[in-house]
Image (cartoon, rainbow, N blue to C red; front, side, top):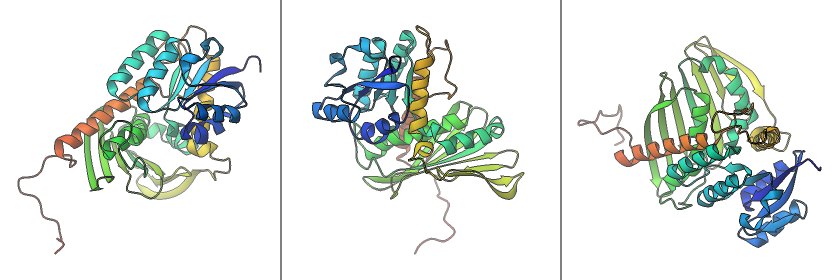
Length: 358
């Protein structure tokens, strides 16, 4: 283990304990050397789970000469501050989305990453889910021309304002719905040129909505989102101008529903999730990609952020991707605020429904 990557875990709460550390423990070639959390008891507890390593209340208390890389799972404000500090001190970082509390902070972080040449990967784990990876691969030719992508992304939480955001709707979009916006950018390679957003609010803390993205090549992305559900759901459909429709209605399977415009119904991929979530959630493969990129990174040569060096084969999401997704969050909220949540302006004479409820 002398040449193993030396890893610090920063933020020892639920996300680190339940999702990140269990998958890290299944990946060879690294060793955890420190656990950091302002709550020293949480840091100590995680340190014992990680093998009795050093624990501290702050990254400033660590000897960073003994740390090669860090995995961060903290709220957006300290996430930005800590990642900035670590990369300026020569530490590569994996940082949970959204990686910063605002577009302005992400712009600053992107510049810092660019200038330091460190490797920073942002935790958009659904890009690494096996089913979505397979859908991405199968639909490659379809997506090379104008296409239509529909993304269903539903999660009950956040169900209240959090992390300094005033409303549940905005908290959800910035801290969970941002995954759907990132998936739209990943599936459609053409830049987004227009955003239309619509929302239905059941009460102060429950909503459902639709966000339409028009891309520069004419492609359309439709995001159906909300926290009005009882359970988590992700699904993606890609429909091409060749009459085909590839569908991943969940994180378990991919089907070819239409071929040349005719019903087809062939199952192209399935996973039974017998590996404790490795292929389903994406956490394992994305952390594996991060550790592999850190090990392969030539000294003094960046692998993302400024176009130099060698990019990971996984097309790993970077701070630049988090910044682009944040800009889409801004535009989505601007659209909702400008129209009261209804998207377009109202008609002077509303068109009646076919049958009005009496």
